Length: 231
Image 1 (cartoon, helix red, strand yellow):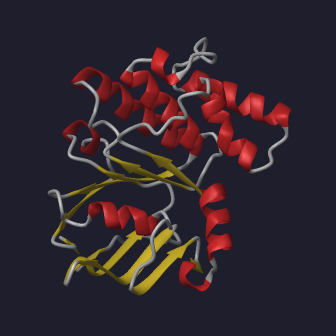
Image 2 (cartoon, one colour; image 1 turned 60 degrees about the vertical axis):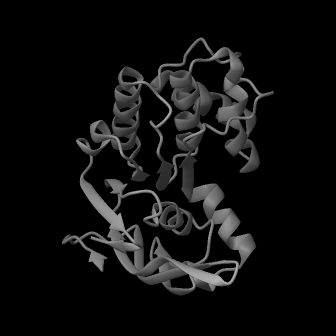
């Protein structure tokens, strides 16, 4: 089943007939069933559905972490199925940011170093790295905490570091998996506002798997998934 939108803009992300099946012992489990989806540049989109509905598989394929068994995935008008692993790695590094439920920060790195790391991998010059890291940390409300390590930060602060890390390279697409699941309601609301506001400022497109109604209220679209099908 398809989730489509009407617009003159060229899509940033387009999936057509995407399917994915996993093998568990002697059984095969279909995670995605010929899914088609179009997401435009700058959209703030939520993906909702019960556990086991295929949301994580969907995010992995949209983020070029996993490969579909059938169908096509296009990012920026290019067919990702035509690229080798090295090229896909470079696209993930340059165009896609990831925000995880468990933060996934490097514990021995400071706040500054965690956010700087994607820029270091991309070969950005040190002065530009410093400027961009300081700028994004100020935007997420972490100015003054640059030297703290993750275990010296609250859950909300760690998630802000994760958001800053995802956005510091100014990606075209951010994939977020339950980014507010481990936070209290007040902190969740703050994190939702930070993501939404920064997405608008930077022009980044968000695809977010979530059960948080505070987040869906700010979304341009809410897509529901069940049994590997978009509804």
